[in-house]
Image (tube, rainbow, N blue to C red; front, side, top):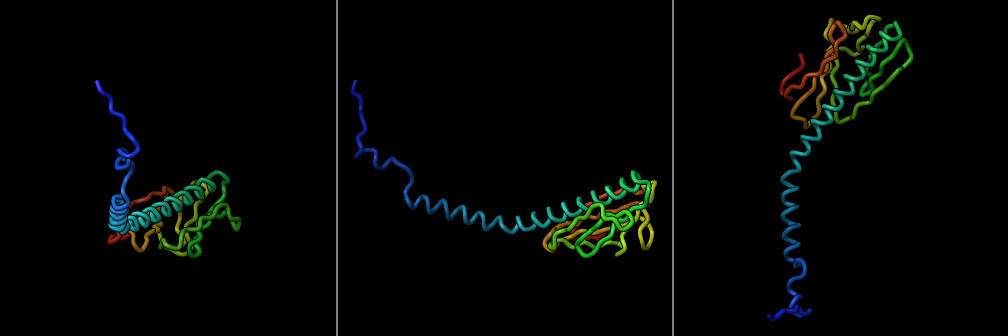
Length: 163
């Protein structure tokens, strides 16, 4: 039986990839990334909308819980992209939403919670609605606070409106 040993001269063609093969792989990855980039912008915008709506929902729930716990009225108000939960003039918690997100509240003066947890919008009647959207998002989030103080979130298409 004869064993064959490889010498350095016979192994030269078997090591690694050629430069052309590596360049073809890099070009294919670049083409695939260019095709996928537009869908990532929509995904990122949708995630911003979702996380901003969740932050608002948490803020409303916190303000309601504090009103019941402290046995005093609390309010949630908005100034631009900054939302604050207050008891009297004392700010308990604030949330600043990203500039890429558009927030449309039902009234500029916010909503107040009484000692039982019931909610009352500063202007108009319950439910208090907040619409959260973004420029390149394919959906919007609707955050509503019912008269009983229940905070809900609903997802809608960007062409629809909160009602």
